[in-house]
Length: 453
Ligand code: NDP
Image 1 (cartoon, rainbow, N blue to C red):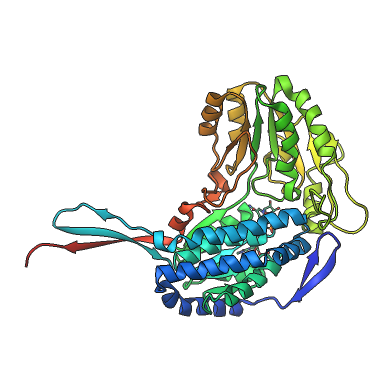
Image 2: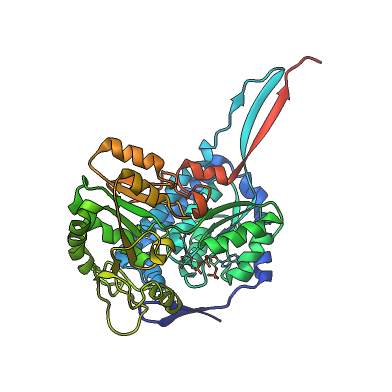
């Protein structure tokens, strides 16, 4: 039996029979059978069905948010925001079936047109940090483009995925179009990756498993999109609004208990304002409230598991330069305090590896060139921020940062209508915005001769 825990209380909240490889094959077979019918649903009808699903998700937002908080330990306010995004993502892609435009290309001797064809069955493998949100970024464009899907949630957090399958069915999505299998990644996930009947795998998770998925997909030349780890830099220049940058920096790394691929887990601060920045940041760290996910005032919940807590702790040894530390509740739950390590060098382990916990490395830099060099000195390239009042510098640095997304005077990374994804070992492909549809369709070219006889 798969025991699903509440990480804030360590209580078992659900027991599920884990799926086997045979169950994964059966789900793929159902999706394969449903594909031709779903592909051929008129675009306006597919749009209508997706709108209905979006409305149903809207109606169930509070239930889903409570379920997500119970299973992940994230603050209820965060879960509400996430469920809003889930519904919004479906609303956005419901507008797409009628906008999957092709082209006509001038050629001699005939007419040439392109079509955007769905891929077939897509396998979606998602992690535990934003369970239904990340799944929705994959499911909504996949369905809008006419694919059918098999979703494998993380074993730690399957509850909202199971609820989603029911909501989709009740909203009128035909049987076999949406299939959820809850089982171990190494078996069920791997089966999706290797199945000749799965046309594409979209994965979010660790770089290590991402690499394994890319290798496994090679056997059938499967399309793969990967959203992997990050070690994003929050770059603060001396000419920034320091108070704003410092007061917002904690939420940018301690939000979701740091279990966020976009976490600004390195703060690069210009040397001349380094101490001032830390002093300004201190009250924001100390007042970051860690506690009961269902208390509306909570900013941060527990880590996802005991094992993960051990991993995070290993980045803060006895002799670590802890400059600021928050507090945690007593008693059961996988708690870890917000922790600021400063000053650190970009060579230190805590500055190089993705910790995926509420631990941030604060690192000094000398000038613009040094800031760019250190920000880019990582295997990752997902997100980041630049804080400066100099507009020309903001654009200069933004263009040279090796990241898929970057914000100026803001720590946001994702919006439903804009592309999200990584450079370097942070991944392959883009999610959200119109760009996601490129990864759930193939371009087909059709040439028709107009020559006589
Ligand atoms: P994983 O990458 O192991 O898990 C992500 C998903 O992949 C889960 O659904 C998992 O299933 C599945 N999976 C695991 N192994 C395979 C496989 N061989 N084939 C197919 N699917 C597989 O992440 P973890 O949960 O173990 O987290 C470890 C670290 O990864 C974190 O500490 C963090 O650094 C990073 N991470 C990054 C995320 C991001 O958003 N970029 C998200 C989550 C983690 P199952 O749950 O059943 O094992």
